Length: 293
Length: 293
Image (cartoon, rainbow over all chains, first blue to last red; front, top):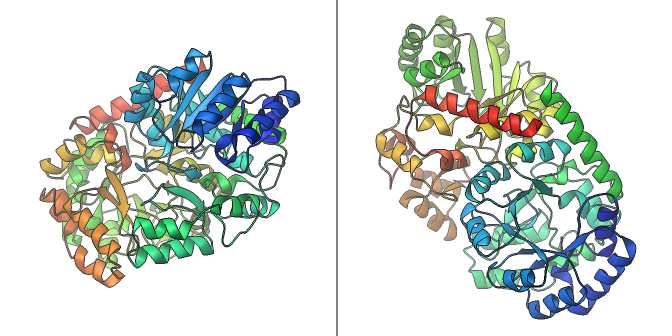
């Protein structure tokens, strides 16, 4: 949710009854502090911060989080052993994002409170196992005793119910909110997501960190580079710096990195976060009613 | 289910309360006739035949199917317009396998009775869209009025319930039965499936027909060929003829094509088909009870 989930989206989700998360992956520490402070002003409900553990200024991000008395932290993209004890000792609830049952076990051993099991269909950075949410969630539920939150492809109320059927205690929804009214993303990006068709997202850059994005000119360049046998180093050069910002925040649809999940096909219109939450909830209730008949 | 699903497996599934399917993709027409006749002797319950529409001797396969009064045909890998009317005019129920909502609509227009919506996690030949079962099933259910059968990753009773939550009227289970006692596959293959770990299957040969298989020496050769910029023609040559037979039926674990789905991780032991069905059913009922509490 880089370049999408600032205080506006997080507080809108929390005000509507969800748990809003500020995505710190695209923020400098002082920017994160500002977003946390604004989020506290905008909602009286709980919210959290997502922290990619490979973030270069991670120490300073963590300082801000503790300083601002954030109560819930979702960590991802890194070793849960490094920061879990630090956060837990300060009374913070920790969930860690994984793409395999073996990492779920390692996270449980590291002391996290909950696991986010994120499948292949998820947008943005993704695991190397390519295990889909349908296979991953029951696997992770069997592997750990702590609550499991399903992520990846959770873009309809039916998918929320399916996640519950698989054993999940909750769901994490990214894609639907990336194109919400309160998302910080550029309108070009939001409209591109709303107009995307099935099969248009792809997991790519597998030699670096696999990432799911909408196919565009930049994606074609990756495909061609890979076809001609490009090394990881050459791909890194092609990716360059700031591609995600360029695509998501600045709205360059052809040269930017348009991170989004397969759930993009369920986005038909840019709507306020509260409306999305209510839609997911009523679709969930309808599906649950059908299932019990 | 090539080299796995002959009359033994199909009749065992039908006798246990499922709808067994004979996979004709690996059979000459006279072999198919023999399997149908033996299946009729082995079960009084309904069973069907799966026919890949790109099969070279398709006319003769269809002749055998009509001649032997098969009542249910699942078609895949081809245009549903070509054979649906022929089969329907002879009183045969037709289901067609798709990997996208747009092909589901085309299949409904072609007059099929049901759609099999098969996601990215499925074993063997697979679609180009890479849409996972969790995303595909609700999309397909929204696109057609006829019943939808979910396939791909349906390897636990919880996944059956999840498929139902997504709107499916039924499920197609491949991987769990590929390693069953009655599967015609080689014991080496079955044991390899039972011992597989998460992330070990991969969708590959995307330049030809994408296929999901267990990573082995043959798979590594594909990866290397692709890295060095191999053309479709060169990959076809590398694949050669009879790779699936070599791996699945003859049990060559390193040079054969070990087709299987992500559900392989749910296979712990080689069991009779009836036991697998009962396990799926009791896991389903348990999950349903949990969901309604």
